[in-house]
Structure formats: structure tokens, C-alpha cells
Image (cartoon, rainbow over all chains, first blue to last red; front, side, top):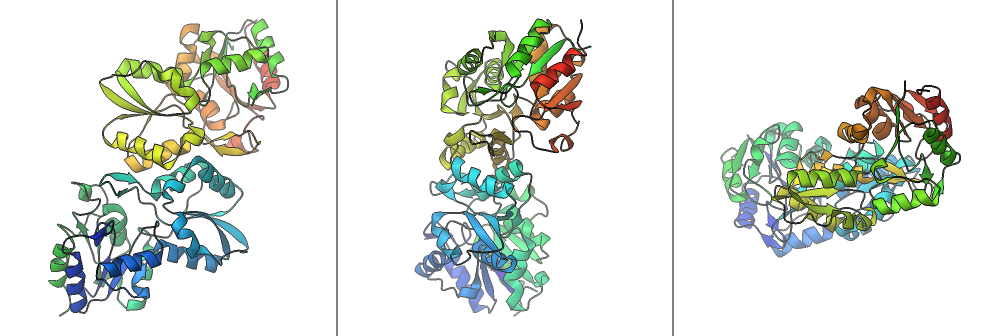
Length: 257
Length: 257
């Protein structure tokens, strides 16, 4: 029986500023069925306030505890370890990390910096890593569906660059980290085996959720999905469905009445 | 018995525009001993003409066939395979690739583009790769010793980024490719086992040469060398010596009279 639902945002609920067809109604149906929802996004180009505003503009009201982002997980990590961040993130995300100065050491924090990724910024991060800073990756996604509809480089490529040059492995805080999935379920009192994840990324969303012990993970054919994605990563999706509307049918058929 | 000598340039013969102490005399001694020399550089920021001029300014005359660069190997590769290059290289290197337009397909060619590495240029290269182009890396070095004396990101980090995002592996044309070492020896009629390599990179220069079958490879403690580099890669150097002058002593003790 399914007792909680984790939803990816970009490529599942919306693309750019447009909701995906049927997605808003699907979220309403899940709420009406009494299923607790958590929105687990790996987007690291937008601050939380912008994501909440985007969802509200589409008619989806989201409470603060319902939205999990890698930046939120990173801020908790930095506080817990007493580290001051050296940020290699999107300029829009920098303000979220204010107030963390003066730790007992540094941590290089890498998100999808977009146009802020350049030789100089990457080399500065490499030198801070080489001097002994911790290494935190907000996400390791390979690609995302860009505004022009084509696939573009996501944060994972740049994390891989720093990993190769420094010989160091990052702590990964977003999906597919099992901790990230578990923290999304933490205040729901719901065992992972009773939760389902819905995403368009066969690797980070789907294989990640199943490896974290979730009972099911559905791959949608929207967003960055490309034919045969479901055969590329292990474990394979529990099911592949057209979109969030179809995923909702699948879930409601298996949810507690 | 040693019958041929391959020398790395940056960090062994010179740093920036300055010869390393004793290096010019060492090259003279090797020449006087009648040992054929090949300069095998992974530098992909400078065109051949600039490297030849730099060496001449230091008093080292180099014939065209004595200087091997990854760009030269790449141009041969592109001609042989009939590929038009999509260049992600240093602007100073672009002119060397002229006249290769109109192949039967494309190949993304990645060198140390320096400041020309940015989100936009990397994403363009990623998209060309995703559309089916071949993938050619001029070098995969992790780091180099920069003008300020500190270590900086080399081409390998950016090759790793594209490799991670595309799921594709490059053809590597510079060191540590065995083909590159073999092509340096091709016109010398000298078996690899009778040749020695001298370099400051324990991975690309030293382990690469030994894997390519060279009889010996010496690691110098100049350039990007850092203590314990000799223990990081397999195979380990035949010997670790202070600099090219000491390497020359080592070589002349083992060369044909």
C-alpha cells in the first residue's frame, strides 16, 4: 500500500514556467486522496522562494516543509559540520547561503551554476579543494531539458571535472543521495517501503529512490525523458507512465483507501 | 642500453618563458652524446611555431620532426578519419586546424582551452557530441603548474565533464596514449625498450611511457612535481631525479658509447 508520494518538479510538474498538461489536476487528486506529498527537486538554479512562487502561480500551494531542495540539505550539512561555504552555485542561489561565515573550515559547494561556470570559477574551487576544503555537491545530474527544448549540461558534469582534477569524491546532498530521500520522509512517519517517487530522470529520481529503499519509483515520459532511458540504469523503474496524470492513476490504484 | 630520449617540455626544459636551471646544458650534452631527441609535449595552449620560438630563444634549436604535440597527432587523426573538427581548444591553437572543413562527419576536439572553457562552449561541445560526433581529447592531464606557481586545472578536467554528461569515452591523442609515444619513436628505428622518457607528470609522462613499453621513465622534481607523486600511479618511475641535469647524468651512464 502506498502511503506517501514524492514528486520531482521540473519535467514532472512543470517545464520552464508552464505546468505539464494534467499535472495541476493530478496534484489536486493526490491531495484529495489524503496522501502526504513532498516535492523533491534537484533544481539548484532557483531559490526556494522562486520555486514556491512558480508553483503558486500554477495553482499549487506548497507549505515550507513540503519542498525539499539540495540547497536546504546543504545548509543543514554546513551548520552541522561547522563549515563556511565556498560557493560555486547559480547567482540566484547565493543569498540562501548567507549567515554561514566563520566556520572551523571551508566546504566547496557546487550546484548548477549555469553561466557562472567558467575556467576561473572552477579553478578557484579546485584550489580551495586542494587546500583541504570539504567537497559538497548539491546534485550530480548529467543533463536537464533546457529552455530551448534541447538537453544541456547539468551540475554533475562540473562536479566530475573537479573530482577528476582533485582526486576527491564529493558528499552528494540532492538526489540520488539516500539521505535526501529519507529526509523527505522523515516527518511523515512513513517507512520508505510505503512511499513512491515520480520523476523524469531514470538515474537520479528513479534508480536513486529504489536504492534508497522506496517501495516504488515511476518514470514519466515528460521533461528530459528520452526513449530507452528506463533500460540505462539499475534498478529499473517500477513502471514507465506517460505523465504525472498517468502516474496518479497508478498510485491511487495502490493507495490506502 | 639507451638509444633515444623523449623529453617533456613544460616543467622539465622550461617553466613559462624561463629555462629550468641546467636544462639547456643538459640538452646540449644529450645531443653531443649522439642520442636522438624527441620533445613530446602535452601543452595545448601554444601553437608549434610558438613552442619552437620559445626553445630557440633559450638556445635550443629544434627541427620540425623533433617536436610532437597532441595537435599534430589530432590533425593526422582528423585527416585519416575524414572528420571536420568542432574545436574546444585555446584560441592560439585554432589556426593549426584550418583546412579540415568538409569531412564526412564531425569530431569534437578538446584541448586546454583555458579561459575559453565556459558553460556555453562546453554545452555546445556536449550537444555536438550528443548528435553523434566523434570525441577526441588532445590530453587528459589533471593539472599544470600555472604562471603564479600554483597548480591549475588542465584539459583533463573538462574532458571528464564531457565524458560524464555524454556517457562517451574520448580517443586520447597526447600522453599517456601509447600511440603518441610510439609515433615519437616511429622514424628513429629504435625499439621502445631502448628509449627513455623524462617528465614531471608521474601519470601522463612516466606511467604512460612505461605502459607504452619504454625501457625507462624518469620523474624530475621540477615543474608540477609534488612530494610523493611517484607513489600515486602505476607503474612507478624507473628513478626519481632532481631535474633534467640529473636525468642526463642517469641517461649518459646507460647510453651507447
